[in-house]
Image (cartoon, rainbow, N blue to C red):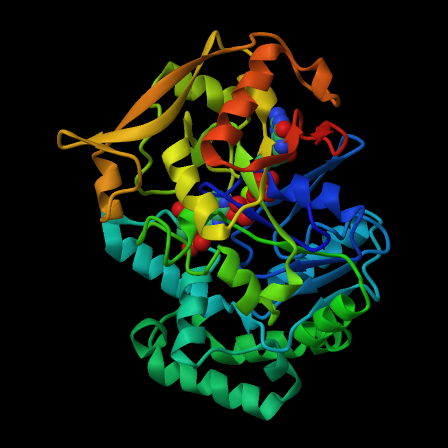
Length: 424
Ligand code: GDP
Ligand code: IMO
Ligand code: MG
């Protein structure tokens, strides 16, 4: 593992990125989040205490670590304020160590209203979003009428930009009695946040460059997972940002030279929240067993996560795209009570065997996974911290994955707690 590491999800999110970022933050100076918004739910467990973060980098729990939010993030200022209050309630002092790019786009109440309308219009084909206004906020950013953090400090410009929303979003806002359509109320509410934001704004790109030049150690924290990437995932059943390696560069304004290694977070089986294709999904007792053992309920929305066996075809795609050097295998303890564990190594589709994802990812709805069956360890590995103490079957499972993907193992997680980890 090099010094400056990107940590990102290799499946459909919720791989356990929060735990891994928190863990590795101990040896880092800066933790920088590059995309996504409050759709993320990153869980950290320290001394039995659980913290769920949405917008704030998972390094914040460590006293003294610098945390950056990049321009690639879409930031809901009201959710952000609540998250800061949560930190204060839990005795975490963020002053002087939490910074936001002025170019970060804001998620505003009307984005959530628009998302509700659009999801309803899609009917049974809805995406099952987190309803955090993410899609509409990224739409505004790309359409170049977004409102950014820096606009908070130019009240007249902010007012004009909000006024313009009335024109371009008239189909959603005009005549609506939903409070989220009330632009005056939004303006007044934003004005109450100016003082909170003022001391947090920083040129993140420049600060990261300076940190790099002075040999500081940086962790780049991704949200969601590669299969939710708007370009490379199971579109349209994706989120609206680049969750992949390119997102780290554009979302923070950094050069690829600043990245020494890429760690892909891989859950030992597969989960997905929301709609969209999922070849190895198990809609049966085994799927339920994974869901119960893994406590697979969303950290942001509480929705049950769909569960299935590990999909190595997906992982081959996602580790390749990101140039993953090593993987962090999480939730291995969830497989403790299985006689046999299956891994999907290829698909069958219309009489053909597919080693890679189909050209049209919508076909993932129809492919049949072909499995290899490995022996389960059928004993508790919960909390094990030494590789030598793992059962041989567990070692064989990890080795199978690493060999198949041609990557190294960075670490293995055997429980939600920070210390329940085997470092390689
Ligand atoms: P993220 O979005 O990738 O940060 O992942 P989430 O926090 O949404 O979901 C991961 C869940 O699994 C959280 O509840 C974690 O506390 C939990 N978790 C992480 N690693 C492990 C592990 O190795 N074993 C178990 N049993 N739970 C884990
Ligand atoms: P973390 O960072 C899992 C999913 C939603 C939905 C789709 C689009 O905790 O891994 P959005 O609200 O982004 O427009 O929803 O993406 N999704 C996630 N699934 N983990 C996440 O984040 C997710 N963020 C979004 O469920 O299917
Ligand atoms: Mg999550």
